[in-house]
Image (cartoon, rainbow, N blue to C red; front, side, top):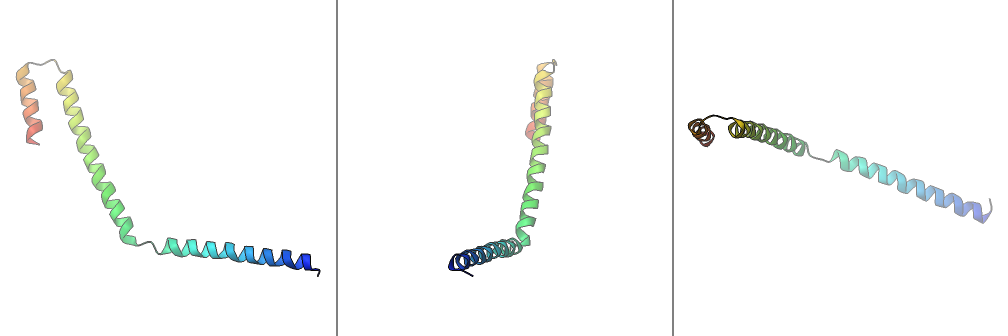
Amino acid sequence: MNPFEMVVAIVIVVTAGRVLQAIFAARRHRDDQPIADDRAVHAENAQLRGDLSRMKERLAVLERVITDNHSSSDLDREIEKLRDK
């Protein structure tokens, strides 16, 4: 084996070692993630979905109030219903 081939072999071995280190570090980091974070994210998502559905309901009521051609007393009653919520 001449010196050039030896240098190339050393570079290949070192590069392969670094790649393997990076792969194992990424796996270790991924496995170290606490489960509580996943639960917190799911809980926050559920809360945000609930908030969104309530906002959609309110928007639908407001659209109905605005587009209906009823008397002002009906409008007053609808506004009071919204305030009670």
